[in-house]
Image (cartoon, rainbow over all chains, first blue to last red; front, side, top):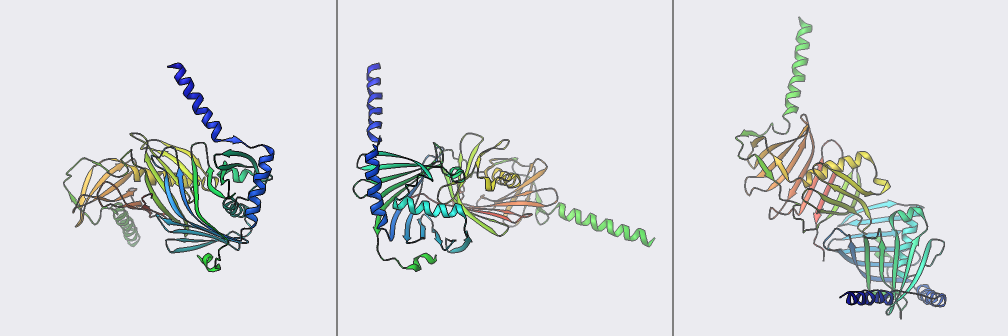
Length: 208
Length: 211
């Protein structure tokens, strides 16, 4: 019995190692290169997403879904369609909110934290977030995927986000999942799908 | 003589005002023989259920929205979490009739007056057991008075289908805030409003089913 348990533990931990393996320096360099090449080409990007809010005390993750649209240099719309309509646009130093048809605007001017959030969302989705000044970054290999973990260095940002994990499709070098960890038990996991790069997107999308 | 008459009138006016405001909650209702001594509120009582609502808060003209989550974690206590639509946790409380614990709150909202107000609001929202002292009625409701420390709660149960539709939290002289429930099945409230009478604060909750 004891050997069986020992074997089982070995098997499980072996699996864990197999799931998440640290990249070598050469692998990191080549991975970053791949992602940068792809993300530099991005002029517009739209993607569907499903968001899973996990909290340890809940019996089920809270699931919401919608669409995200980005257009260079800094137009961004994050839109929830299910189970409610809520969309938020970052545009010219303003946040425009449309909550079930009720519209409001917040002037963020040069607010550093919102500038950072904007950069963070675009960075998370495009993948180009390898800023060693902002984050302590570690790199891992998974089966068919790469994983980068970002720990914010900025104390203000760290209050809200303990760690960001971006999972990349190995072939396409694009982000397929964003995980924002608040604590060890609670996180938000966003799965991106139906990504379209460089389709024509009209500015009116960002009128909200 | 004239002076004392004026004094008498002033005193009477105050007395009249006092009596009117004293009975502000029940003045339009008819006293009735009490038909029960206790009441169990049906909402938020299933420990297997995640109560997840879209929340809209209006406070002195400012709008704040997000997701409100309540979960019964043991016989006496609920966990209450408020997050943004993106999932960032703004506040996280544990609350019972007699205890209150702040698990976390973002620094922007960490104000004693706000926390105390929400504590009172949520405690009444989640309250299960009411001991009833008096009963009143109007055309649509049976109204029960339930003492709550120095204050009172007035429970409005519809005559039509016995649903708990309103609870008014009141001091002896004036109403403090009202919780409105709308429920289809009388077990679960789909829409809830918490409206304050003395401060400009309104919390609206709309239940949503996760996909």
